[in-house]
Image 1 (cartoon, helix red, strand yellow):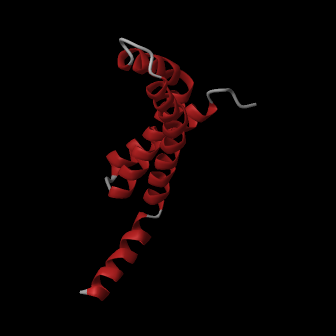
Image 2 (image 1 turned 135 degrees about the horizontal axis):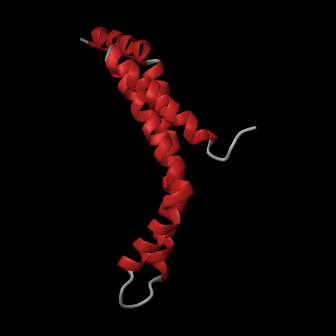
Length: 116
């Protein structure tokens, strides 16, 4: 049975494993994977613990004198919709790019060599 923090445990395990592999033999691909798991863990914790407090704090600091529905609308949309949507995408793109880094790098160098 999965706990409600199973994803956080998996992402943390990915961070630990990729860090150990980086100490053994550092490569760019492993750095991409490490940063991907760090961003995925941050995205998980952001949605679970950071989101509401950050939204309220940002709205309170931006709206000081009079109520502004427009500012509140945009802050709410960005912090509650855009950031939770974009962070996991960035994290998974980095993990996948790290996993296929050698193929991607070889392909890019072939394209560059053809054009030169």
